[in-house]
Image (cartoon, rainbow over all chains, first blue to last red; front, side, top):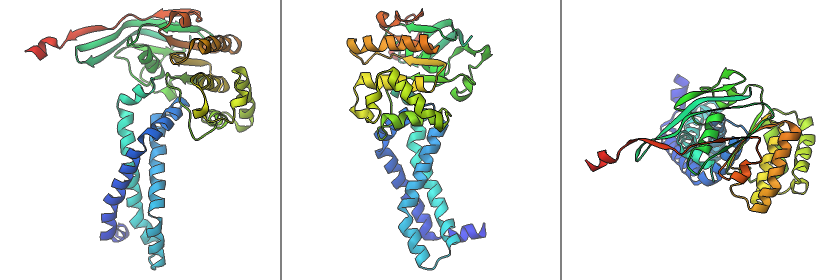
Amino acid sequence: MILFTAGLQRESIIFIPIAAMTLLLASYTQTILAEREQLALFSYGVTKKQLALVHYVRGLMIATIATLPFQLYALISGHHVTSVLITLLPVLAVSGLFYLLPLAFRLRSTKFVGLLKN
Amino acid sequence: MLLHLNALVKDYNCQDGILRLYNGVTFSLERGDFLAVTGGSGWGKSTLVNIILGIEKPSRGSIFHEGRDVTRLPFTKRFGKTRVAAVFQRSASLPQLTINQNLNLALSLAGIKKTERREKIDEALSFFGLENLANSFPENLSAGQRRRIDLSRALAVRADFLVLDEPVSDLDTSTTNLLLPLLKGMNRDHGTAVLMTSALPRVASVAKHQVHLTPPLILTSNVHKTEA
């Protein structure tokens, strides 16, 4: 816990809302493309929970790639790998959740069922 | 008995009050059967498909699969070992994958071994006359071809039970004439139980049995509330 708190530097706390909002925006702009993909997967028998998991993992991957320069910079600057990871993991986890938000609302609404119709 | 719907009722809240889609729909479907659910637009045909698949919940009534009450179970647990394929009104394939890759993914998700997939895909595409389109992308196909792809997916996964929601709603007459015998053949040759909804009597006539839905009822009206 001490390590965790130590890892969450002031800068990284600011980083969380920035990354989260960016991912939320990215998710919204992807809606039309994502809907087609989700409908296809749903038709193939993928459940709503699995769809949400796929979307969350995608959010994590995008956040990981987006923060890669910062990770590398921190490592080059001599920060310990564990410290970088501890700082980064909350950023990635929250970003993934924000990327998932639009889909989660869509899956819960009756609109998603309506998408199955022409 | 593959599927039994018992006194199914579905209510919706709408602007005019409570809309009752069905007032006790009851019917059964055996293995190898072909049933068409008919009714006008807005009478709840698609909703019935969704209820059967567990996407929506009924307000009252029960759904039985092989004698087991599955009304409250999600789709994944609803039909046990019975392979179910659904073809919705809106044809959906992953646009970035070819037809071949789409079918491969669908079979993989259905738990079919890699070694068996190639043969099943080829057989299904050949059954629906789509061999030449295996490497095409879904966007380059016509509505009729996309519908046949949906059906070939159902055939490739060796579905025991196929649920189709308005399978020819977006197709012209000639494509419909091509598709219906294929659907009938799938039921006859492969023993697939088919439940299909359609507003068109001509389309429904290919089924062995038909269930006619009645128009929805408005149970309570909100009109007096808005006027007050």
